[in-house]
Image 1: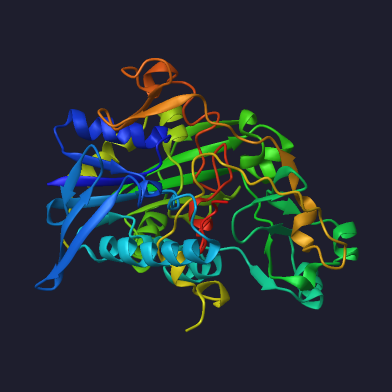
Image 2: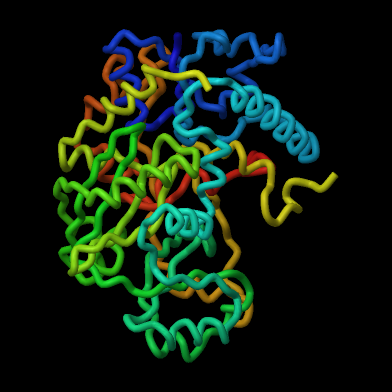
Length: 320
Length: 112
């Protein structure tokens, strides 16, 4: 039985997991979906209610019924043949995505994570509501394009308000790449909310923090790393100044661990990277879960065996 | 049938996320619009360097990336400390990169 790894060609985290599996004698097929259709083919027939057949590359192949688990690790979009017209590319991409993606998504195997569940979990308003329902403390949050609502929310905040992106914090414009981090709103910001009304914005109460924590969930195993800020910027958002943070192993409180377990079940995820603020009073406040979050750099800093644990999860597999 | 790109809430395309191919960054010349139309949240963006992958090749034998000049040397052995700390955290909205692979779910290919 084979572990199918869907990852791009240059992905060092995937390299480590593939090596771990290979050394352990576990058959692996690693493919990037950009190989489709020119270097990856699918031959699938529906027989007795399940898809059977093969995925083939010029170098390797696997029977669909021989797959024990699938790691969906950010594969790239299809690379279609040069020369197709734009309508033809749109058509080919759509058919490929529903066809290849649909066959894979239907396989009754362990997914880390199933792409549909990951896609659902990307919605942060959903995450927050589910997390609260699972007993985790969450920040007071506003999603709105109303300036009146923004003023109301900020006025009612005892600790000040922050603004943070709901989706990816990156845009490309004006020949450059721009990134965003959590920003503490000032009076000057709130005096001029031009552009607030053109789309949704997420505002939250600033959560007083002694430090932050990243919890990496791999199956039933939780790895928790405390993140200590060493600069003003990293205190607001540690992603903004990695050079100023340091890490330590932590154990979350039991009620947080239990809440995380419920959250993973509710979201249908077996892998996730969760961010928490740890308050001066020791309380843990859930910020978000990233179903495709990174773990490698935390393993590097703490020595926690995340790669081996993920490889073990994939090797064990499961039918669903 | 509604086109996928026309569905504002749950485009079927998002149900099988596909990432931007290998370290590519779109060359987007368009400049920011005016203050009344530019989303408020974009005020706080910072310009960041474009990430570039080092020279490598993909080894189908090893199923890993290898150095461009030595197909028997995995990249993770050539520069083990590079990993995760400089350029490779590309699929989380945390870590040294802020890109989130699931966010890029094209209904159209990005090929020219």
